[in-house]
Length: 260
Image (cartoon, rainbow, N blue to C red; front, side, top):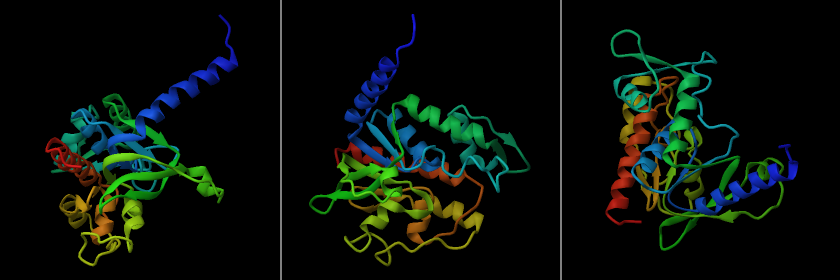
């Protein structure tokens, strides 16, 4: 049987349209497909929640792919190792308390497990704004990344979700959309920005900072440290993984209690 180009096009359109129709309404909308966002998405979907993940770049994985200065290896400690091995990603001991992992295997493995768990991924989509009702975020305003890159005046579309997770890394994009427009649960009321690199303190702080910062909005990963002014940590990724898992636990608990 020969190939027919129109059938190929129709298949792509039909399948993507099905995914998009399902994905615009979810229990949790995760913004950012780096390590924290992917891990959170995986655990949330594994718990049975409907999860949509929006990533403005073409590829998911965030800063994992490049390892440290384009040496594609990463380092994790015990907690991070446990998360990776649970997801079927290999780690290798290196000295007391340290494990290494192949950055390509980690990034691709996290993507694979998240999608297989049921996460609907929409890459090349950026978040322009949030939808707020009665002092709570209930959805996102989205558009194609290319629209922003080309500075085109194209109106966006909206989504609905019970919770939003800002896992956009250093930029903390979702929280910055709220900054100055609502009252955030932050010490100064606004995003503080990252402190200089200090791996030990940054790794510890990222779990402490994984929390709700406005009704319906949680932060995880480097977005959490950026919001609260904690240190960045370089190419050690255990904190990112554990923060994603912690965010999933917190949000799942709220959803099970019928909140949101």
